[in-house]
Image (cartoon, rainbow, N blue to C red):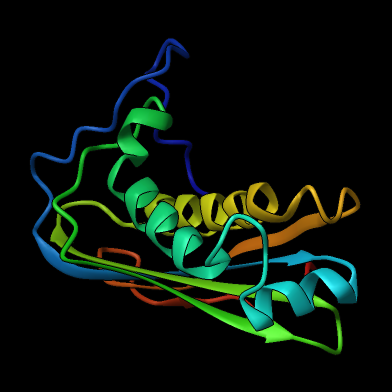
Length: 162
């Protein structure tokens, strides 16, 4: 395991100094899901939820959240994101909305936290939009599926712990 970079020699929390790092193209993809009753998934699919376009609002919320990650997570660097996209898959087999958040930047540090934040907030927004119809929803399996760029290179994860 590598050294934890958010602590100095005396154990105090610090923002990582990326001054000497090269700017590279970086991409991160985070995935997540929100399980719900089949009837709730049908409301989303048909566009008949009382609050309106559930997935449209969740997409915008996820994009906005990615852009504000540094305001939410104390030691994250503010990044000039070049792309944020949120895609949804209505998974009728699991009665879930599967979420894929992709973030891109050319910079000195990665965009994994932005992708994770986007997926998380998209899931929370879906919950908020349909909670009146279903109080038993479960948000879960939020993880970094892939990341590219930077000193550590590419990484892929399937969402299953060893």
